[in-house]
Image (cartoon, rainbow over all chains, first blue to last red; front, side):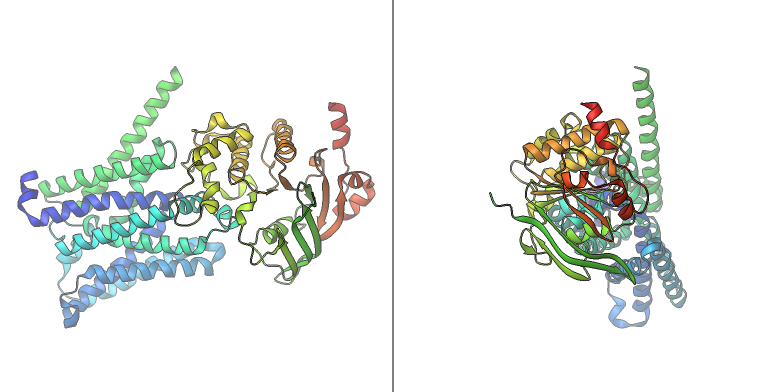
Length: 282
Length: 257
């Protein structure tokens, strides 16, 4: 395996991107999960799909788009979607979750139109839907790295504000923090992470890499920093095991990564139960 | 020392859609006061708090905080706020007591800065003030309602506010723990000279440590010293409270002594 990675550029791209995504998706995921925004991540990934499908369609019909990496339009539509979700959440104050199906169906609907308009990119599309080991380009890797730097900077700079906002939004507002601005930035960064993760895990499974490692981590962590640490550890494990299996068995990495995450989650729940039972006996 | 008003409301009214929630409220709180803001449910207490905290703008009237107009007041960290426990926080949240308390420093530290050099010591000190230092490394969700409420007070104290506002802090706390909770507030007021506003719908909670009482029901029905409040008749209280209330707490207190 190591030899192959050293030998093939495409494997280097996939593994390096995967390792970066294995950090940023669960890192941001901790904030997304504790703020109960997991479904929003799902909605945003479908909007990203609309951008990708749109770009793939345009690449066939408009020469300017022929060489454009579809990830760019994906990023644009994800960020646009995140801003729209916020608008809708404010519009439907008492039914905030309504924003999710609205944005999700808008994303899927547009994707369906673009996909049926275009002819013959099913292989490409498959790699965007479920991830790919072979389709990650060097350019994709640079984009993922750029997004990762933004995510780290954002969380490093606003860690304490994000913590307060996640733990107790009313308190954050009452203490005069710029809650709205930080929240909007947070949504935009979430959109970026989804666009970045999509190349490896696929659009349909992006939200699982954001939520599953956190779901496992919450079971055993003490405190918030530890929750982040374990989430990244589990995310990284899932990505590496998932990519290796996908490579050897020629499977879509989205599937293997998610199934590995689920196995980790089940294992953590089981171990926790056993430990609790032993402690209860003592 | 001349006591300057920390909070000064003048003729404050607030309308929500077409309903008058608050009408002509004038109220001042001076340094060292321990004010109980009493009012039945729906009397506009929470609205008044939100106006003081700058979350709502009054439809009419002026708000001054520490002598400055509320709209331009920048030192929100001078005002510590403890909300009703049940309101806003998710009890499964994976954070330790220490992390929760440290989050009270967020505004004081300011944007783009990470932490205070003596942050750890400050956190432990404020946990000691509420008698919770032995729980510092526990997850917040593992504590009882009363313990959580103490942690939230520590979170407010850690920024060393000059004024502490508590919104129905004893809702959801078992009866036995309420007394020790008030003893702690008294201690903060007397030993640490912290100005306090305690908001409650429960007339019984007006204990001996309180210096002033304000009775709110859309408008201020009574505002004055605790002793004057004590001399109000039950009839007067019933009139503004809207139903029969009796001040039974004083008898209880005396019996306890």
